[in-house]
Image 1 (cartoon, rainbow, N blue to C red):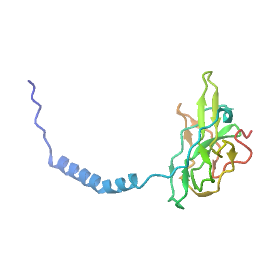
Image 2 (cartoon, rainbow, N blue to C red):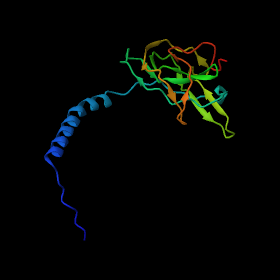
Image 3 (tube, rainbow, N blue to C red):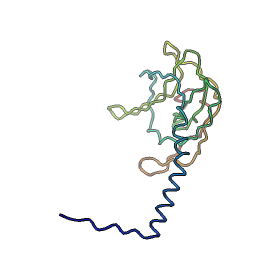
Image 4 (cartoon, rainbow, N blue to C red):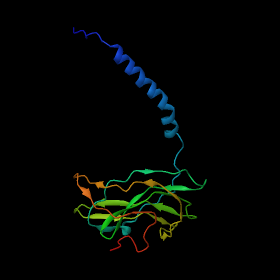
Length: 175
């Protein structure tokens, strides 16, 4: 039978552990308040039809970190930011609070790699009850996002388009 060596704790180590414990204890209520501050209200969702997919030249970069503003209205719903394919490169469309269109559901953006290796993308869009796209509602407020350099999975800096507040009107495959 092997007996563990006795635990030796110095005064300095004990004081450090006590400071860490006090720090954790003082931060815990704040973290709990943030984590339990309520659910983010999301819109009703609808799937993207395969007909919405367009072929793109490269996969999207990692998502940008966004800081959500306070909910501006009781009926407002949150739409996460998304990468959109624009002029042969990815541009970030900032997350936003909006009032959902009456009777509409949101089809979130999707990215897929086909079995043959081809890349497919469909932008986020509002759809009516029949699945037809409808005009997006105006944003009530936007997330804060830093437009820093994007590092891809290979560790290289990726050239991206601008950070946008509103979706371009020319269409998803804007050349």
